[in-house]
Image 1 (cartoon, one colour):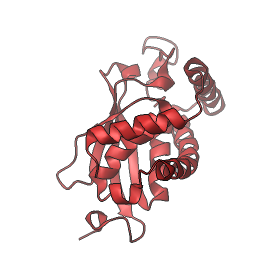
Image 2: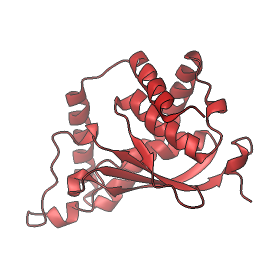
Image 3: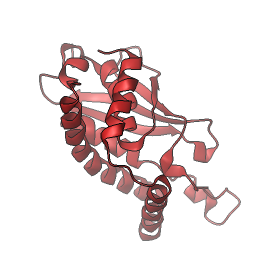
Length: 202
């Protein structure tokens, strides 16, 4: 696998090839989507599930574009991702950079190397967003909303396309007072052979 700095450089190279959208418009459009889901479903837990499902559909499509652009740029992913640690670096340093223009960090690997965390210092989805406090009407209920849960679906959908079944959860969120955003990713199953020997069950 390439070093972390090489992965970051590759992510930057891929970002330059992507068409750009206005960041404020992007954030406002996503905010409108979440607002509509909250109105439609009223239950934050169901809104979280809907955001995850939408993200999954996006992730399934994003991975094809990511792999094709990476191959064109001479960054063959098959040779780079030999284990889950490599894959985590590619998702954080290249995937997030290519599609959102932000670079995430990876850490918190479990002892068995089957789970890790992705850390986001900045979150373009939550620009202009403030969740109501507990004392406000409906505030306590909306504290259960995982506003950026679409990320979990995107990661799950993308990794599913490369034969990795994962479970993702947002465990820290700056909208709820945490110092950074943390997404926990756990490998549940390798869906087919060919993902690298280090993925396979013993």
